[in-house]
Every structure is written in structure tokens, then in C-alpha cells.
Length: 452
Image 1 (spheres, rainbow, N blue to C red):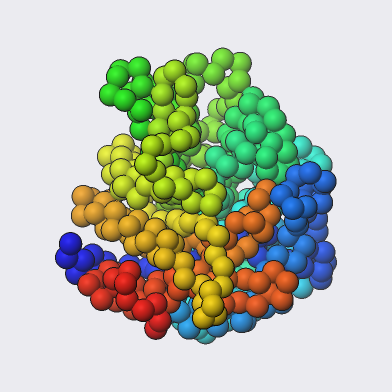
Image 2 (tube, rainbow, N blue to C red):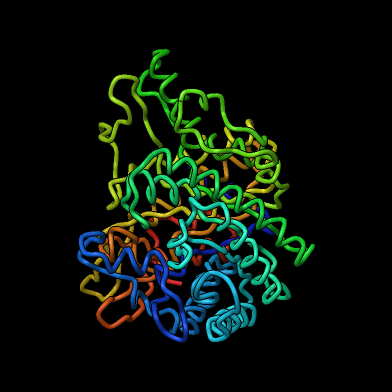
């Protein structure tokens, strides 16, 4: 295979991503309020290994070091989230200036290093005081979210151009309110669907508020998507896969880009959410970009549901199938089905059991192959018409992986959780070379030494 053809447009954005609760630590310092993830991780039995994000990677105190590592790697774009309870401890009211100061310093450090900040306003750490009033089940929280969003744009909009409202509303609703494996740990499908509607409504309100605060702001939302494929070519399996797509992906995409819910609405019976006049038009705000998070595909059977064990498949340490063609299939489908703004791959990555070798390095060849294969498929999707403008690897560094605690490592940078020492993995050096060459070429063979 001649890989010299896998070069990306000159203005393609290469980056990495993180989330506040997963890396910052300092959970109760400098006036920060409690979040639902502080409460959840402090509840016995909720997190593997009884881990918490109390310290995490201590990014709150080591952000300059982390920005320096990004600069060393040539990463030009950094997607991170603001901790809502750090800047507004109760979710509303007067800002916490010490929390604001942290993000001031971070943003300034990034810009001085030539790194473009992509700010996510909600990456799952809802202020606990708002959860006490009903959380996302309470429509009023969407108004507070819009106020918070506008406040952040007014503070940072002179330096931040790209604003993401909510990260993965599907995960917030389904894992937080249907399966209960994530904060706040509720298990009820009707509640899940109402929360999902309220999240989309909050997104719409936030976009309106952001644009009122700064008409030049670039607004988007990020969601996880997975192509749903039939186990066989039977009509039953094809229908099962399409139903799964409608429930998991179109249930979010249709309101955002068509101002409607999908046809399977009627099959949900009394579980459908309360949708009021004007809600759908508010949700379907014109967006400047849409963020796609992709990790795996789903294979559906009419008789057995999702098939978890696929013969001959490879899996990451999360138990997720590695299937790079899925990202191309996904991008081409949504491009065909919707009138989309420019796309960014805002998360894509793999967890593996990374260990220091005898030479003191982390030879994570599996991760390098994972990134390489997915970048090739993204490039092919672009050739076929998908308007992808950038790629953010998940994650910049190993971190607190939600209910899995610190047992899963996604990072380009290894973190020793005892000493908090950072070390670049082979994948970090390799990705740095991809960035410098703006794509893949024959020099970027997996057999090449992984040094800059």
C-alpha cells in the first residue's frame, strides 16, 4: 500500500482532548463546589478500585507542564472542558474568581504556545446543588446552563473561538439515568429519555445565549455515534440494526438537524418525553460545527440483540471491538442523511495495558496502529464527501476513566498515579510526526523508530 496519498488539507486541525473531572483534581480547592461526579465517586461501590477524581492527574496544579508537553509534540488544538462547579460553585450566581483564574491561565498558556483552545462547557460534572433540585430532569437547569455558558463566553470569548455546549448527551442520559453506571446513578428509561430531551433543549438555549454574548463565537455540540450493522443480511437483522440506529443515534441527530424525533417515537409508548411547543425549533439551532466521537460499531441481531463477541475481532482494554472502517461508514451515513455543518472528530482512541519496558519507554504499538487505521478511514470518508476539518485524539494523557477509575489508559502521555510523573508514549512521538507531516506517508511505518 502506498501511504503517501493519506495527506490532509493544509488547514486540517490536529489535536488532543481531555475533560475537567478526569484530569484536574483539586476537587474541593479554591472555592470549587461539589459536582455529581464528586458525590458519585465518593459513594462506595460505584467506581472500580474505589478510585476518585479528587487528585486525578493534578492538572489544576500542573497545567503549565501539560501545555509544555503539547507544545513539544506540536499539538495545535486542545479540546478541554470547564468545570461548571469550579467557576460557579452552586451552578448559578456569582462566579468563583479563583476558578476563573485557573482557566484564564490555561487559555493564555495555550495561546502563547500556539495552541487553539476548543472549550467544552459541559463534560458531565453538574454542580451537585443543581442535582439536588432535580438535575437534568428539571427543565430550569437548562436556563442555568445557558446563563453559565454566556458568562464563560463573556469572560473568555476574546481568546476562545470554538465552544462546545454538551459532550455526549447520549451517554449522560443513558449511562447516568438508564443503566445507572455513571453519575448520578439513576436507572429508569423514561427518566433517561426526558433527561436527553432536556439536555438537547439546554444545548439550544446555550447556543442562543452564546451568540447573544459574542456573535463571532463558533458553536457546536459533540455526541458519540456508532454505526449499527446487521449480523446477517436477513430483513429481520437489517430492521434490528436500523431500529438501534434510530434509538441511539437518530434520536439525537434528528432533533438537532431536522427539528423532529425519529419515527420510532411511537414505539416508546408512555416513555416518550414531555416535549412542549417551541422545544424542537429551539433545539435545532444552526451550528458552526458538529463533533463526532467514535470508538466502536454495534452489530445487531433480531434474535439476540447486540452481539458482543465477534469471531476474529480484536478488542481494546475496554472490551470494545477495534473496527476502523466503522468511522468511515458512520461519516458517510450522516453526511448523506443530514445537512451538516463542518465536522470534527472530537474523540477517537483506545485503552491498552501500557507498561514501561526495560528501556524505560512505553511501546504502545497497538495504539499507533489503531490511530493510523482510523486516520486512513477518515481520509477515505473525506474523499467520499465528508466535511471533516480536524481530529482530536482521546486522550492527551491517561486519566480517571469514569466508573473504571484509573484502570484504563487511553493517553498519549503515560501518568504514574503514585508520583504523577508524565512520560510520552511511543504513540505520542508517532502522532507528533503525523502532525508535522499533516498526514500519513511512507515514512510513518509502524516499523520506524518511534522517536521525534
